Image 1 (tube, rainbow, N blue to C red):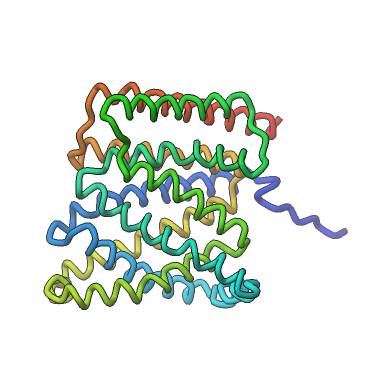
Image 2 (cartoon, one colour):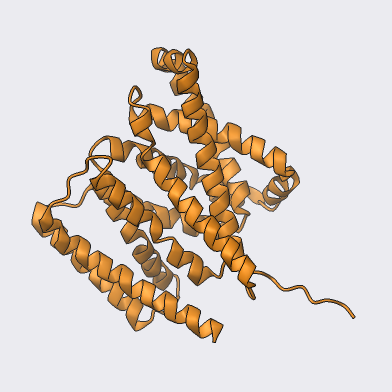
Length: 307
């Protein structure tokens, strides 16, 4: 008798789900560690930390691909890119990727930590809206979530007269990146390798231009270990997140993704000294209500699948 092969994404076993949950939680905790990493590199600016992060991330990514024997997998993904249009779809999102990783380390060190976390809270709601634009049907709860988020943004604009550029950059450009990558339909590991490989030469050039700061890092064993640790955490967190996405049902993986903005917000108003005014509860509260609607929607969907 031939054994049937069950795809973990469609019919996950208890062990598969548990492993996926652990990896998802671990990846989100490590993302939060990267967010707060500037605290351990006070001698560097947020932009210089970004340069070192990208360089060390590429070094660690190459090492990880080699260790796991994934070069064939990465290159096979590139072989599926056809024609000028295919390469444009692959390369155009890279600046968005680079800007988001820069903002992730720059914002918490320059007073935009709370604004950044607000952007990440809005991101899943924006993705729902993008799905609607692309032809997906929204449930009543999803429409309610989008409405809460829209009113929350309106309340914040009325309160301070504007919304931080950091908030808008996260929630408006990341959906473009994800949509273009999905249309391209290449493995996430291949996309990550391409993005980092394109950005690293620019970062190396800037590190050479900023010679004094670069020599300070290279001349200190402790600093060198710290920036290497930043690259390692970045790569491991990305890989853990990708593996969790492979193992878990999409709805459950999406629900666990809300852990990241919650951790960013907590770090922003505690460890990183971000200012949270009680008046912000109006705007944040409405956005959180929107998130709660998506959580209820996701839990209900998951329960129906289990039943």
